[in-house]
Image 1 (cartoon, rainbow, N blue to C red):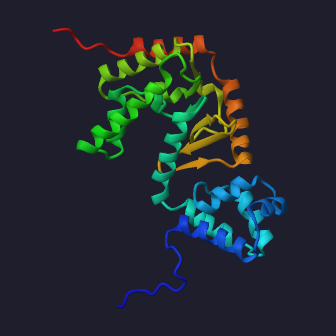
Image 2 (image 1 turned 120 degrees about the horizontal axis):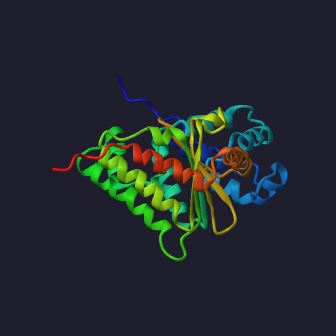
Image 3 (image 1 turned 90 degrees about the vertical axis):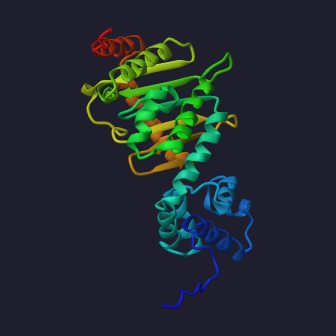
Length: 280
């Protein structure tokens, strides 16, 4: 069978193709980013980032562009393909890591495992190995994850709030000693001035983040971005309305969480329940 001919000559990568279409539609109408922003709303820098592929935007802004350009459903369909493209998940996570290093404050909700910023090397190794990493790749990923903890150290370390589902304290490691080390590290972290650790008890019931690890970063320019992640995908969210909605859900979860002092007691209780290795 002869190779398929490329008709348009445009990118076959969903994310790049989406950005190309946005640029083409605007250029066809001889619009500046500023004039587009006046006509559609949002900040012109948002459209600029979407056209360079730096951000995907959210469905609301894409639907507004579809309406403005008279392309009902076209841009939204391209956006859905781009968001669903597995190859762009790592790219988004790399960008999140860059933003995390510059954040002035951070806060997170964790579904079933401690936040990466509060994981011991033993826990990180077990979790990454369960995800399929092995050999040299596993060693590199463990080092990369544990090195992130330096962000929370030092006099100028940013404040970090971690809300842990109670499930985190019940999802133990097979190695009891490694699990003890992880729980002990959480207790020590909770004593540091810039770190707040709270437990969301099972009794809090269903809530809007119950199946999604959610991280927030406040940046130097005052913006807040979010990164949401489940077992199969992750997404960096920069659209203001989507971040704001997630923030309201997070605030409700925080209000249901156990206060820091009591949370630390719960972690200590789980630590005391871990069997000690017999002395030889």
